Length: 215
Ligand code: ADP
Ligand code: 5GP
Image 1: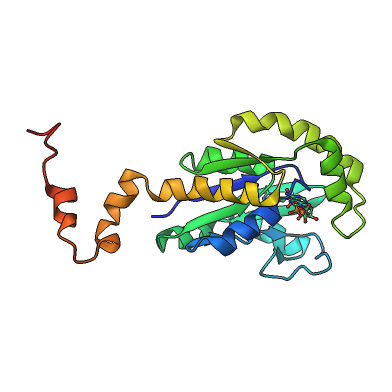
Image 2: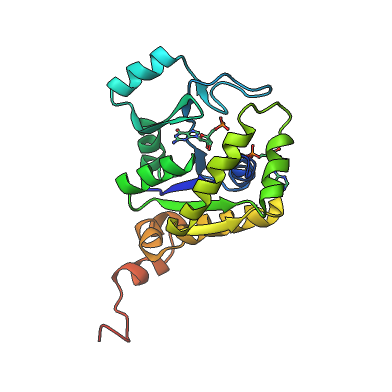
């Protein structure tokens, strides 16, 4: 089974940008495409960035218990589909969730084994610049900055904190976190036949006696 990784941050910090780079560089890491009722921004593609649906469709899915968690962010619904995560994990792949801070807490409480990563902007000035520089007019700029002040103190409850100063630094750190879980002893042992196909090492690792502890 794979693992769930959550990247969260105040809006505008760069979590989508960092996550997209990480996804393009790590095989077997799959983004969970979340649902939203907000309209697509220029360049956003349905099914790639979000699944864009109406408020009515979203509320129907809430009733059907379709979402692992959902939230109302800046007046729109956002929700994480449960089944997509299960499908990714059952294929032995890792799932990446790019969600807001309240969503991260909800997922972590429902799936304590999920790994949560908080991305911090290097400064407020820079956060403002990034929100303004996104190429569309953000009606919620002041609200987003105010929310960021409430979200940043939540960083201490996450498993990891990565500062998104220079993009490649942040990408390398997030990759390192994910890769470290792929070499956890229990995961390697569970997949050892796959990693060491036909090797005589497999039986020794799995069935041999450790001379320090087992003689
Ligand atoms: P979020 O998903 O957290 O809301 P985005 O990924 O949309 O944020 O990034 C917000 C803006 O900041 C984008 O214009 C993006 O290109 C820019 N950005 C992201 N990371 C960096 C970085 N490390 N340095 C400079 N600009 C960045
Ligand atoms: P934006 O409108 O800027 O794309 O997203 C607003 C915020 O909602 C971002 O922090 C984004 O990561 C978050 N978000 C996206 N999908 C989900 C989701 O399924 N659940 C929750 N809780 N937040 C989400």
